[in-house]
Image (cartoon, rainbow, N blue to C red; front, side, top):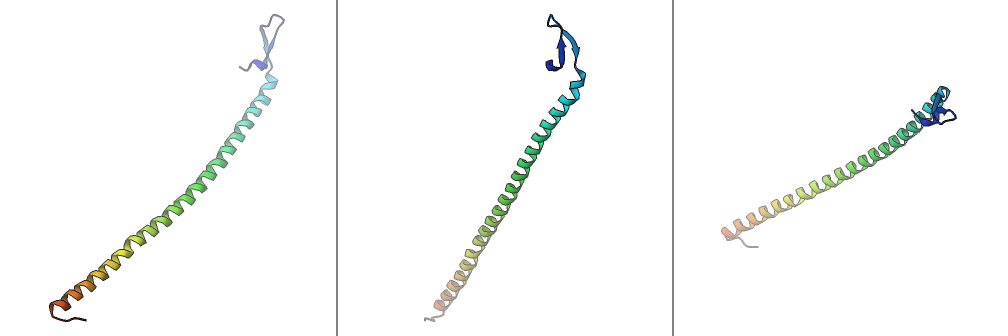
Length: 96
């Protein structure tokens, strides 16, 4: 029980409860909690948006890294074929 709702007698002992104040007090507490929940929801929404941006950025970086990994392999394979051709020419006595 909230001490503000208790009426006391001359000796300071509880005399009665001011029930008419309970509804107003409960409404006030509800509104405070509702504002808190709304503020928390705004923060959650902002964090979700930030998370989506980070996921997008991570995906872009991953895609670039994947392309970078593949590109040198193509170049190395082309170099190997060229080297193989040069070796075969040398084997058969062809020189440029």
